Image (cartoon, rainbow, N blue to C red; front, side, top):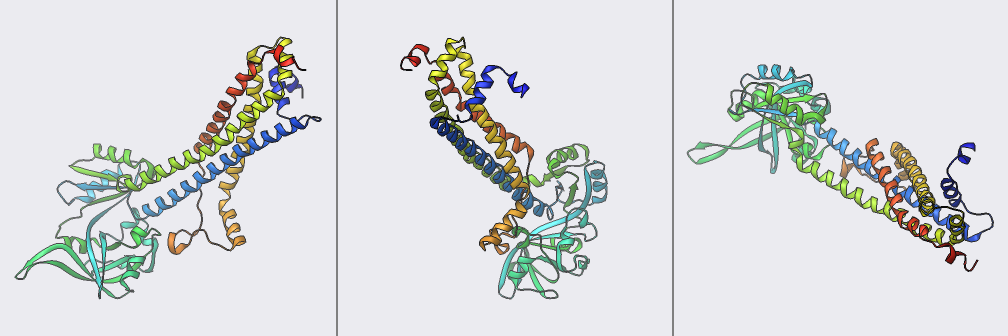
Length: 421
C-alpha cells in the first residue's frame, strides 16, 4: 500500500478511474465497458497464441515426417556419379554437424500390377547404411527393410502405394523405366520384375503413395551406372542445413552440387509461412478492434470526468499530467487484458492434447480423421518468441488507442467545464 501511495498523482488518479465508483451508476457502466475491452483484448491475444501454436505444431509434425524419409542434405557429383563415395562421406563427416551419411541412386518410373499403374520414385539404398540418414527401416510395418539384398530385385513400397497396386508381401510388381532400350520394333521402356518384401508407413501421403526402395546395386544396374548418384546426409540440427551445405561445398573436394531439404520443399514451406503471416494479420485485427474499444471507453470517461479535470487544472495540474492520467488508465486496461490473454493462451496451447480430446468426447465428433489427415491429434508447438511478439503488439495497439482521448482530455477548459456545475 505504501508503494501505491508514493506513486505520482497521475498514476493514483489513473488507477482510480479504472475502478467503478460506489455511488455512480455511470461510473459502473464505464467500468463495465473497460472490462469488456479488457476481455476482448485477452480473448484476441489468447486466440492468436493458440492458433499460431497449432500451426507451428502442424508444421513441425509434417516436417518431422518428411525428414524421416528425406535427407537433410543431398550431395551430387557434377560428373553424374560418385565412384569414391566412401572418401566423400569421410570428408563430409569432418564437419561436426554431420552425424550420418549414406549413398543413394534415384529415378522415376511406373509400377505395374495387373491393370493398375502407379508413378513412383525409386530410390536405391544400402539397407545397412540407410538408418544413418532416415527412419524408413523403423517405419517398415510389414516385412523387413533388410530383405533388400544385392541382385535379389526386392522392393519396399509405401503403404498407400502398395494399397493402390493391391499388392502384398511376396507378390510381384513390374517396374517400367522411361529410359528406353532399342529393339527391332523400336525403343521400348525397360521392364524389371520386383518382389515386394516390405511395406513402410512414413505418415506423409506424398511418400507413402509414391516412394519405393530397392537395393543400391539393383538400382545401379537398372540405371546402367557404375557408382551411386550421390550422398545423403543427416545433421544434428536440421535448421542449419542451408549453412552446413554451404560450408561443405567450400570444404569438400571435387565439383559437387549441394541440395538441402528446405530447397526440396521450398514451395510447401513458403505456403505455410504465408498462411501464418495472414493468420497473424487477421487475428491481430481482432485484437485491434478490442484495443480500439478503449477509445470509446476513454471518451466516455473524459466526458464524465470533465468537472474532475477542471478541478485538477485549477489546482495546478498541467495538460501533460491530465493526458498522462488517461493514458495510464487505457494502458492499464491493455496490459491487464494482454496478461490475461497470454496466460490463457499459453495454458490452452500447452494442454491442447487434453482439451481437444475432451471436446471431441463431449460433442461426439472427431476434428481430424486419420483416414484423411494421417494425424489423429491436434499438435501444438508453443514458441515463446511468438508469445512475446503477440503480447507486444497488443500492448502497443492499446497504448495507441489511448492517445486521442487523452489528448482531448488535456484540451478541456476549466471554465467551460465548471460553468454548469
